[in-house]
Amino acid sequence: MAFPSRILVLAAVLAGFPLHAVADRTTVCTITVNSADERETFRRNLPDDRFQFVELVERGRPDWLASACRAGIRCDVLVISGHFDGGDEFYSDRIDARESLPVDEMERVSCSDSCPGLFSQLKEVYLFGCNTLNADSLDSVSGEIKRSLVRAGHSQEDAAALARALNERHAGSNRDRMRQIFKDVPVIYGFSSKAPLGATAGPMLERYLRAGGTAEIGSGRASSKLLGVFGPSSMTVASGATDDDAQAPFRRDACRFVDDRLTAAQKLRFVHELFGRDMAEVRLFLDRIEKTVASLSVHDRLTPEVAAALDTIVSDRAVRGRYLDFARDADQPAVRMRMIDLAARIGWLTPVERHAEVLRMLGERLASRTLDVSDVDLVCALNRNGELDDAPDALSATHAGIGAAHAGIGAAHAAILACLGDRFARAQVLRALTSARDDDGAFAQVYLRHRPIADAGELRGVASAIARMSNGQAQVRALDTLAAHGVADRESLEELTHVYASARTPDVQRAVAGILIRADYRTLAKDDVVRTLTQHRLKATDGKDLIDALIRRLQQALTDAAPTQSSGGREAVPRGGAA
Image 1 (cartoon, rainbow, N blue to C red):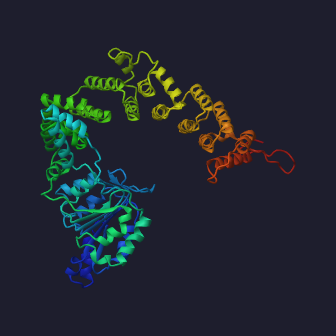
Image 2 (cartoon, one colour):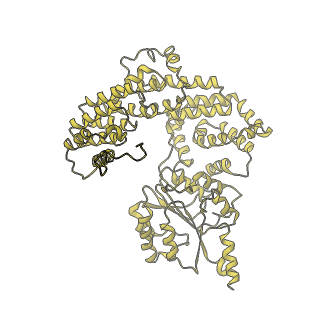
Image 3 (cartoon, rainbow, N blue to C red):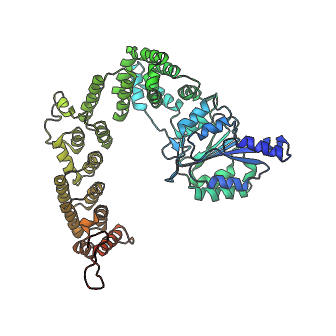
């Protein structure tokens, strides 16, 4: 449906209707990336003589939004249906669906002259997705911003006030972003938290439309009736940003990152301009700066204009120093690592200097008493290819006790050292998996997602330790962690079968079943295993579950493996075997 508006006009002319009869109709544009319930409800209830519908999504075509722009479509009402939990894109839960609507692309359309008409006359927008108008900040960075402002010479009180103002002025929530994208649109409906699925939203919408809501569609005025119907489902309403808003300067800055009228060199010169401001603003634009620099191809970097813009940034040593000072003070190690990587991509850090910055960060984190699972996740991801395996030795030379002795260090520190290739720390993390302490087990879980158990000896040791655990809840946690490993070792499976037999709660038995059901049935399909599962089964109060499925599969495997007899009493030859 590349040119639906033109087709409608042509059809009107051929049918003898005046052009204004089509032009006067309200154009309802729909973007359906998941459920079509909302679209079809609108279509059924809005009269054809007043409304025309245009579905913008063209299945199998990745540039469908650009196609709509080129077709000159102008929407009066926009209905977007899709999951939106993460805040980055509208997406589908259907496995075969390939279409999505990234927020970045919506911003590009809103900011660029290449698509001036699509959203230009919108009166209403309906965002059927979770958290589409959630007002909570997605990335609150008040702590590090405040410290940066204090370093710049502001008092503690002024710094706190300025940090609050910066966070408010920069579109930091889903609600803010939607208001920026749909600038000047009078009415934007969305949800502050969980939205109803299409199958539920459709009938609710139908009820509203049949109760007189049809007359309100396209009016550009917020409907108390609609909010009343969807109110229990967290529907809320906002209006698009205007040039008088406090966030107007932010929108102008944000648009300079995505406006396709600007060249790569012009965007880089704007990035340099940002670096000249307080680093607090740089932090708030970090995501956009990262995307801009990452989008540069090798060819882009070799063009004289881009190369000159990059050289200007690289040679600005004062900005480099302020940037790295801010990065080292970041509240979150993951943000600090992003800033380090950005500095390397820009050219402020050589590979050797980047490595030194990472070691510095690791040393500071290992010296901290506030480690959490995100630290372990980050370090394991950083050392995915073993490039930081030298870190324990390098750090032990400058941080007493780090990497040199393991007695007395906690599970968090052990997990980080294990991520860095320390085999003694790995053994300690494997012991932490079977600890009764929830925190220890959590650190071990995160570590093992990155560095799973592959050695049969380690696996047997862990299975044996799980069998000796007395805390049922901790035992379930350890078993669930092991389930992701796809255990195939015969001795370990036998040990876990004993755990099942001696279990005191159905939860432990279910956790064991979660491991066994993923195992090779040829290893497990034995009469004594099925007897153990059946005879020691603890009565559960919530009906059939994974244990029943496991028993059925093993019984079926035993039946399939049993020899069949020929009519003469001799064992029949299995299919595919030799006579």
